[in-house]
Length: 306
Image 1 (cartoon, rainbow, N blue to C red):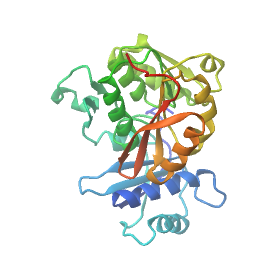
Image 2 (image 1 turned 180 degrees about the horizontal axis):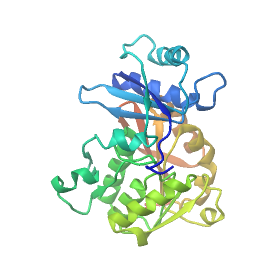
Image 3 (image 1 turned 180 degrees about the vertical axis):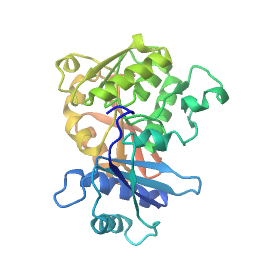
Image 4 (image 1 turned 45 degrees about the vertical axis):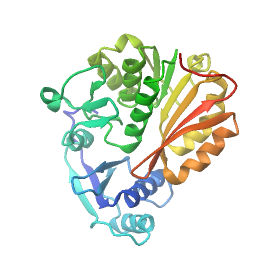
């Protein structure tokens, strides 16, 4: 939907301390397909200046506030939250409105900022301009920050030959990898709008020629199964990460890595166990605000990096 096409949209907002907010965001996200639960179009999660985190869920019709409060109370499990607010948002592009109010984000050497901060941010190799839009990924969420931190650490050790980014969203991780490693990146998303946004952001960052973008669900595109990446990135959700594990194990090069996020700290152990059963070893775990980023290495080779 374009920015010039307003529609009637509703947003439910609640604030809580980081771990509680993470549980609320997870439960609202899991309720997307649960019978009887409010059906959210999307769920976002941001840090507030007061140290709390704001969980924001978007609906295309007024949600049942009673049922929504019950879900929040279940996730909070007795911990304090702010009062639930449900408001109408005239502009359907609410992500752009809310995220444009956020400042730059630093993750290792990476600095992610919007165009409104361009003049006050020193530009260098690790500076990326991403405006909030209709795709996930401006680094305000802990899962994206965790992946950027892991990429920064990998970039200090060497360069993979080929990177695959599954669920690229705005293209932020694909762009970061192209800049940090100066290597080709294949990036996919199941949303054609996200792919177009990622193309625009890659062009803005000067790495459009390094990134090959595809519309694909997981690894279903035949091109992907013919690849031999030595780094796969997937900042998605726990269930698809679990389902994609065998295919990732088949295509990633021995000695390569998978970088996984979009999972809570509580989901991390099960995710590690799933990938360990397929020949991966946990190299690093990054925990931020209740969310986990996992770097796992594929056994049977000395090293991925030069």
